[in-house]
Amino acid sequence: MRKSIYTVSALGFLALGAAAPAQAADQEAQLSVLHGVPDLTVDVWVNGERTLDDFVPGELAGPLALPAGEYTLAITAADAENADDPAIGPVDVQLESGGNYTAVANLDAEGNPTANLFTNDVSAIDAGKGKLTVRHTAAAPAVDVLAGGSAVIEGLSNPDEQTLTLDPGTISATVAAAGTTEPVIGPADVPVTEGTHTIVYAWGSLDDGNLAVAVQNIEGLHSAPGAVPGGRSGAAAETGPDYTSAAVAGGAVLLLLGAGAAARRKLAIRATK
Amino acid sequence: MPNTTTTTVARAGLLLSAVLVAAAGCAAPSQPAEGIMLAPAASDAAATPSAQSPGDTGTQPDGRDPNQAPTSETSVIPDPAAIPVHRALPAAASEKTPPTRLVVAGTSIDVSVVAVGIGAGNEMEIPDSVDRAGWYRHGPAPGDDAGTAVIAAHVDTLSGLAPFSELRQLRPDTQITVERADAETLTYRVSEVELMDKDQFDAAAVFRRGGKPQLKLVTCGGEWLDGRQDYSHNVVVTAVPD
Image (cartoon, rainbow over all chains, first blue to last red; front, top):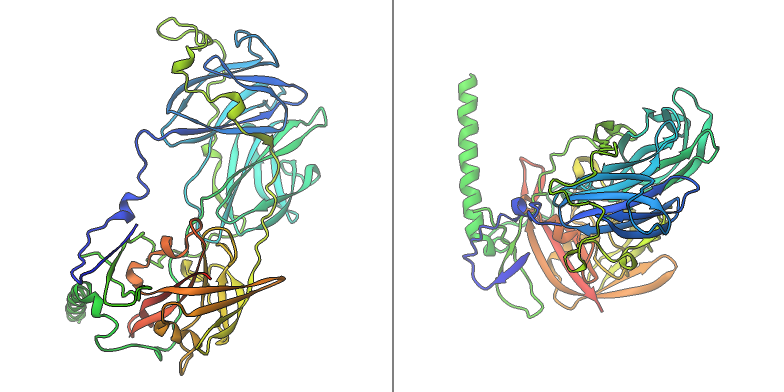
């Protein structure tokens, strides 16, 4: 990233700002798996290979690093001999290079076991903020998510999701049927952490009285502040060549640019008269 | 042309070494207002339930049974034993030990330190008071195992100099002392003093969250630019644990 050289003619054409976010074309995909079907211990099969053994409701596995491509996921009863008679699936999923996914075994709104593949947003989060996504993967009608007594997400249906960008802190959240405030889940403390994407799953069954939340955290998505201000009056200003002496090359260019800008400003003023 | 040149007082002492700093594309304080608390940032459009209908996946185009395990040497599926599995519970809040006081030997810098975050324009918050510095609470704390703890303060007051104006003249090996709340005091040694053009502010390097532990003290320096009502540069002092 950084290089010291022993000359003043340091003309570096570093365009790392543009190059850094570019992802290698052959980057692996990240796949997590969440078990959100109550009362069912399962095995998870990927391309016919037993990948998760005795996977218990409320557990999160992974992430698995997989080459981009298509995979077949199947969920069987625990200790099935093979994936030929799946309880859920098989489903084919396409994992893109560099993508981040969570495959969820869950109940649909009517209570039937199913599977969903969610794409996780792993883009950089604004400095000082955290991201919170709520995913409805429960056998329940549309819900509202309430924080501090007011709805922050409204009318979320299985298998939809909604994302909020928030100040860090702990939210006391409840889930209620859409348009109501009587909790069906919670209140539950949900931490919002700076630079982390917290994904909350509502799972289980309203009719069976086993609604619950599961939480997945994707860390390391922070951004740095854009600048550090530190001046108010100019009282500490330096003048003369001493502080820019190492910056002759760059400084000269800046001066030229500055002169050009000033000239353009004058022209603009003249033009408006 | 788009290079950043910074003066460096290296530990070895001497001379003008131009330091190339990779512009990380974060210099522009042009971010609009902060995201509004609890405002939806995205709709539910991203939900992408995948093919759920069984039966459309019975056979591959080549007629191979997709549930047939491929030979092990071609498998890309991780060994089940190597896959982490845990209860999907909220992460435990990580407790940081905040710094409370900063003293730089041989200078007038003896200030209390308060935790700060992000202010207007995506900039690091700086305490107004002349005898206070701000520690960037979202990044590492002094004493953490990894990353750069950043403490910043104003270089001037409305009429004169503030203590951090002395950062510019710090010599290599100057001792820096950081007191912490309910934890032992830490000492650091200055390893580098940089003048970093604000137009080429290398935020990724200054606010590094990983790598070896360091302390960075940041203020303003260089010329006063009347048009911007701001200095041309940041002074960035890097110190390493003593």
